[in-house]
Length: 315
Image 1 (cartoon, rainbow, N blue to C red):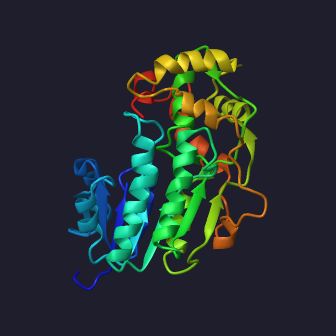
Image 2: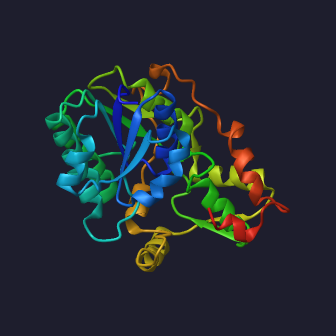
Image 3: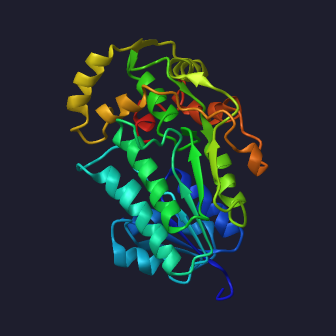
């Protein structure tokens, strides 16, 4: 075991993290999972041999903890990210300051490769704090480690996702599904393909940025229509006026779960698709997976006669 290479994965207990950790373990790495709550990462330990997967307390905001987590690692992967703030400034602390800290301390520790997960739509000029801080994080990473690889996925789908599962669950109890900016286009990418992209960048592609999208581009409304067809629950999809959505977000963003925030509404003003000419999955030798090959398998539990309402909302 002592001859194995060490990798540190920040945010490794999240949706994408479990797929990346599984692949790293299969390659024989000792995998340190740097998270705020190590208990949440223990569920991943059976993916490797005894002692191979090691949850660590290492919030990206903690200088000393990050330094300990990257010590002796040859590879660092930063998956840490949030979709909504619990406290004002969380986006900056996680996406920008945290990303820069990881890159700076990884360089100091002599880490051979850093792979950083950003997002399509990262833009320093954006009015969205999510998109703005994602762009700031990229700049900080490149400033510390110019050879780092940056991956920008579109929305990811897979059995544990928080997009298709959420709307399918809502359809089990609501006669109308409210959305905002229903014409906005997305290019959903399978989480397993994104994990494969991470692995493909371990030993190459230094200094490059890849935008990761699936083979299909669909509007927000079209994605919901597809979801409803798969689960066999005809529902009306209501594209709310933006003003009303902002009014509701003013209340909802203060509640646990953050069902809707004003920052998300700003994000939805812009398409979330791979830029023309940007290198993507195909450049990494990965054939993008179609949604219709994956979605029916895990959305079946939301069909009439499936696991039912209570189980649906446990996702």
